[in-house]
Structure formats: C-alpha cells, structure tokens
Amino acid sequence: MLLNVLPSSYWLLILRILAATLGGYIVAALFSVAALGLPLDTMMSLRIGMMGSFIIWAGVATWSFITPSLIRLWGAIGLAACGLLVVANYGIH
Image 1 (cartoon, helix red, strand yellow):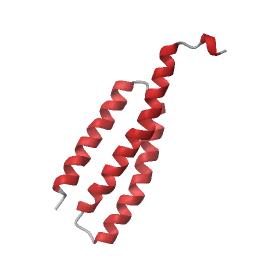
Image 2 (spheres, helix red, strand yellow):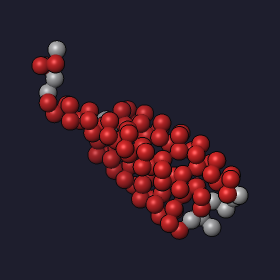
Image 3 (cartoon, helix red, strand yellow):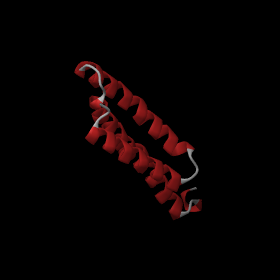
Image 4 (tube, helix red, strand yellow):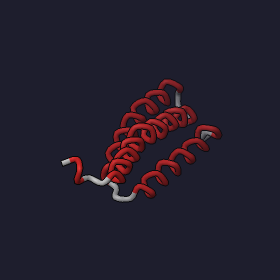
C-alpha cells in the first residue's frame, strides 16, 4: 500500500501539516497581539484576542487541508501575517 504513494506526495502532506500548525499559530498569535491595539478596554481587547485566536487557528488548519493550491495557501498565510504585523505595530487608534 505504501509503495504506491509517490514520495512527492509525502512532501506535499508535510507542507500542509506545517501550514496548519505553524502557519495557523503565527497568524493566531499575531491576531491576539493586534487585538491589543483596538480602541477598547484592555481586558476586552485581551478577551477578543484570545477567543479570536482559537477561531483563526482552527480556520487556518481546516483551510490548509481543503484548498487545492499550496501556493495560494502559503501566500494567504503570509499576507495575513504581514497585515496583522502592520496592525500590531501601528494599532487601530
């Protein structure tokens, strides 16, 4: 059974797993930091960041196995990370 699977498909699966774990973690962590820049009370911003990061991580992990294109997947993760990094640096004030 394992002999019929191409070695390149293993690398594609590893890249999807990395996108689900590391990419999801990076985007979720940047979202929780960017939520601190919201013009709200600090505790409310923390709650929004924590709860939103769980939803975002689950969404990225699910989407990484649904989308057919790895280039689009990593591009969207990179674009989201860059956008959230800008918001985390400058805030939304």
